[in-house]
Image 1 (cartoon, helix red, strand yellow):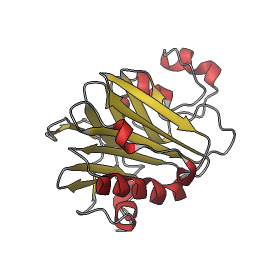
Image 2 (tube, helix red, strand yellow):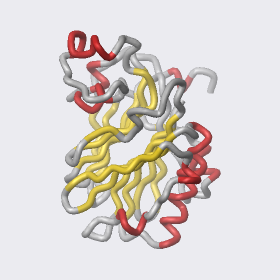
Image 3 (cartoon, helix red, strand yellow):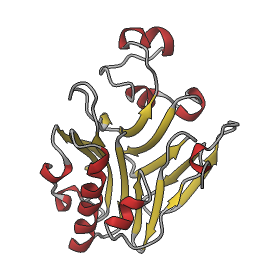
Length: 225
């Protein structure tokens, strides 16, 4: 259980920074062992992560604002059952991901053999980073994911084994792992669970595109509703 966060905010104010900070603090309950962020600046993705809970992370949201005046950001609050190596986000200066779920239980030494990816970490979320279509490549695994690219695009997707919520606000959008996080953080708008097995992309103009993946899978988030 971890928290993933995504945000695009146009011309954010100090009130927006406070709101986003509250989102991280309310996400902390899903992962108190490490916190990390990636944001776009100078045409590259910059990543910062520390083995501390969100309330101890040295946030400086004003510093993360892009040259165009907007904020493009993803974040992660990690719950670890083992060590604090290979925290998230995982990526490079072109592309970064945050992932909630499990991709494989196989030992990292076998990943190259099984998936044909050269991984630098022992965090199975790195397989999501390398995959061109994780929903199709890992249909039986669990995932709720936000991705950020250096061309200022935010991609969010999940399968039926993990929730992922979109809250649209007047000057942007917020992605959270659960619906109660934006509610507790007093985010304006109503959180909507993203459709499973769809890629939802936002650009700098907040234009949204949705791509359906042809997978017949149960949405376990609906069971019991």
